Length: 241
Image (cartoon, rainbow, N blue to C red; front, side, top):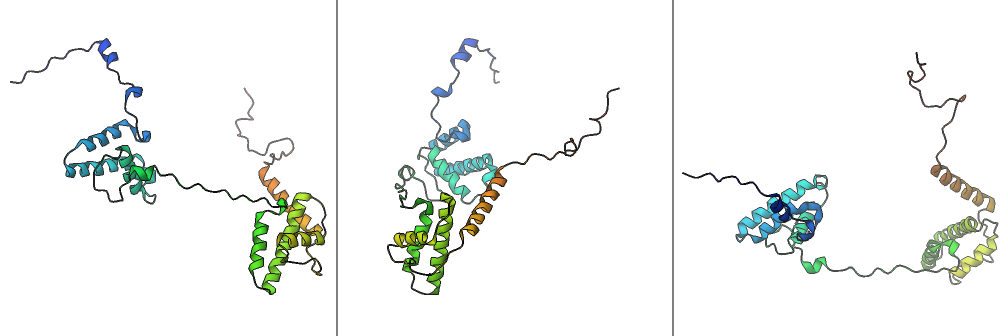
């Protein structure tokens, strides 16, 4: 017969002495999954049978997917889970993955430095897009299409000038700036071309600024005869008996 093990009450000193603090535990690679899942992965790494390791890895992937049900429809979600599995195992888990196995070297690779485009135009109120449009116009062959593009660029330059300087400007000034920005390839200084009038452009800029200001300001509620427009419950106006 099997003898039942007699229950022995633990002392409070032993319970406190054997407490496990997070500061003494191993570091978690991905803390979002918790320590229990990390222990499962550590157990899978210690399994010697490859077939059993593959079964455990698939089970762990299912558990990780259940912890993030909102990501099941995301493209390549399973691929992300397998990559996280290898990261949490410190790249020691040797299993058959349906995706290319992530390595430590690939994970630690840093992207090339992205050079921020530095452009310091002489007339900053025109912006870099105007200079880009002028460079495109210089590459086009002479014709009606190029002439129409140049006219659009000149009118846009005039509108930008008025937006920032808040003053009137003559077309000759715009033509001189266009000639300078195009490196002398676009010359409208001696032409009889007329741009959109200053009043029309100022009216357009004012309309755009008013639209932006009205959308950003919250209008107060309109009061009718000293009463709020919100409906009042009938019990609120009842006098106490």
